[in-house]
Length: 169
Image (tube, rainbow, N blue to C red):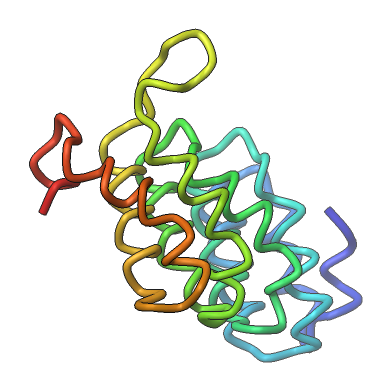
């Protein structure tokens, strides 16, 4: 990730983002987003941590990008990919973040979200986790009667036959 010091009003505080302690890194990313300092650049910095080996840092990074709203929206494809992260906490953070970019961004990624509903169609036959399918249904449902949602009616209908009751309801 890029140099946080170039953004920070107090460079010492943002040294924490480079610290080996994942708690400090996570807190620094969230603080940076909350500070409102150069939102687009902050979003880029946070997105640089999406592949961190630490769950807490990935989760904070995706939430930080969401806190920046539309300024973080160019990272929507990476946020959609995080809906399949190995951590359920990161997946939930990604599901919270995507609508923070606005309904138009959710609509642009409707096809990717619909693919998440195909629980048995994943490469190698591995099922997509139920919480990911649930988030996808909720996000697609938020589109209402927009053309993107109507075009994916078959995928939404498939969710009614999902083996997990949470996804069906």
